[in-house]
Image (tube, rainbow, N blue to C red):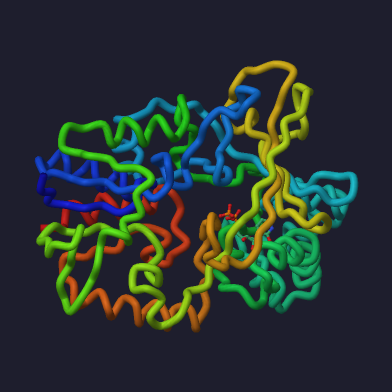
Length: 380
Ligand code: UDP
């Protein structure tokens, strides 16, 4: 069997790409290293029958109508607006830090004064914690420092092994300070959870006569790049390769390993209806884990007397057996190293890098889908 495209990785990126190409009439071979499809959006029922996100909580949100419409061909949506609370001592503050949080911390009168100053200084709905900290107005600096110390500092140290001042500003800016009472984590136009889970979306995406799927198959054991030529199963191929794994691994770590962060997930199933007030609670000033997700509250699954929670323990990725890289680490050094791998790709015009790992970018799910759609329309 000959394939026009070989796609390495069946996560959201690879599966969307496979679908688009298959619908264009191309034959696609989709290879997956794990024993299941879906990459990190994979979800499944645990032993208690609770639908869990095995590789961390995924909440779909986008302002991109094209992405939303495309995915809506493969799923209905459960209306869900994600809300997050930070557990600080025995109270819970909304994250992003908003006007409700401001009042909880400072009381109505001071909060009103701060809000006035915020509105005078910023003509926007949101402001980053880092810019608040460098405000010329002492009260706003003091507010910035409060939010920094109580919401960002320890969480970021756990997540990235560095303080918020040391990580890429774009990372902490994902979670702004909000100058309104809106307590949703995301404000995008389209938000929701796939009504039967993400694995079903993936299965529907890849169910097409032109797509052949092989799981438990490490593409890099079959794919070799050499002197501008691509070999598959020992023979030179003129298939286009869409690669969604780590760029450094593709080139056998020739220039050294790119830094990634990984996570240890610890699941606990409890014999109770409910564990916490919302789907995700962030531990911003205590504990070794960053957050606890209670899946029933994310997925809306109705199941009594039992609930499954998951704690996330971030750590440096070491590429050891079974470890999975989840987050690229944005910094000058990693960008320079990534550029070297990218330059290697130039010798292989039929090799295309796609997705969070291969492009070494902190993409959200919708951005990954948008990239896959763009790439597959452009590819020859
Ligand atoms: N962050 C934080 N405290 C929080 C939430 C987020 O310090 O309560 C910082 C942290 O550095 C994190 C970044 O903001 O890595 C982005 O958060 P987001 O929730 O977008 O991370 P993700 O869900 O992608 O892991």
